[in-house]
Amino acid sequence: MTARIIDGKALAQKVRARIADDVARLKAEHDVRPGLAAVLVGEDPASQVYVGMKHRATEEAGMLSRQLVLPADTSQRDLEALVADLNADDAIDGILVQLPLPDHLDPQPVQELIDPTKDVDALNPYTAGRLAIGDPTFLSCTPYGVLQLLAEAGVETAGAHVVVVGRSNLVGRPLSVMLTLKGRDATVTLAHSRTADLAAVCRTADVIVAAVGRIGLITADMVRPGATVIDVGTNRGEDGRLVGDVDFAGVREVAGAITPVPGGVGPMTVTMLLQNTLEAARLRRGLPRN
Ligand code: NAP
Image 1 (spheres, protein in one colour):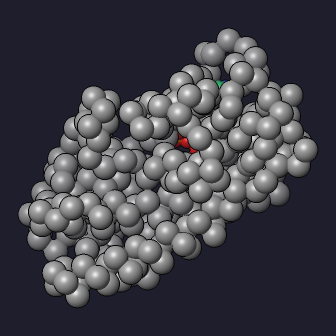
Image 2 (image 1 turned 180 degrees about the horizontal axis):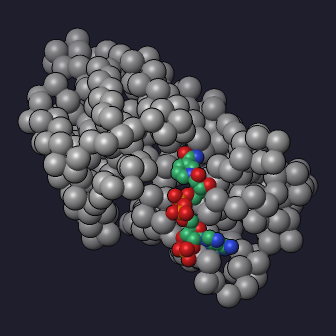
């Protein structure tokens, strides 16, 4: 069996076109233009690339994009003062603070300060708590993208056994909660570096989501024939090329469906940031989410 490729690039284009239409309608009907502020502290090259990508995508969707670049020696107090200003700024519906921050800055109080109604990156503990009690506000962007990819591929999560590998607060943990919410109804195993016999655990999965950051961690012998494999990992191979956590060439011969890297989860992450910003703009004005 050769797996069907789940094309995240094509899905992202489709969803972004729909978001752009919704933004145009919001402007025409309510004179509202959603606004996203991205805060970047310092000159980390990868962060500059990510913030640049988010900026372009936001503008292409017809939204206001504001990039705030602060010097690497910015104090905790000044960063928090900027977030407080953005909380009070009515033109801004979504705030994201690009991670990682320079070592002298503590991200936790900054994230706790972001107004929950503008927390489009979903990293405020309040937002995580709302998800944990089954009443989510915003869904963190990468796991939200994974859910869209599964839906697009026609993968039924209800009753399925999903093994999520990786328990970070950014990806694995929130995804595991999202999949168990009523309506998605998956049975989830959340695996991590201390999981005993990861291969055996993975072989019981209808769906495997790899979110670890280790090249070639998921190999063909770990995948039940016909299972769906979603690769969140983004690693640089020895040749500098972007590769995931899944041994793509081997696993595609066993799996039923698989996401590539690049062109799988990556394009969906920025797309769901746009979706969250659109939703924030609507909710903040008392309009329904969609
Ligand atoms: P992270 O915070 O470093 O977490 C990695 C997780 O993997 C941890 O829970 C860790 O377990 C687990 N782990 C490490 N080695 C393992 C092993 N041998 N077997 C099983 N589990 C293992 O990473 P992250 O932020 O979640 O990111 C994960 C990957 O996704 C990275 O490659 C990152 O670049 C990528 N990513 C991609 C996107 C995208 O848009 N495509 C977005 C975000 C992240 P412990 O908790 O036990 O240490």
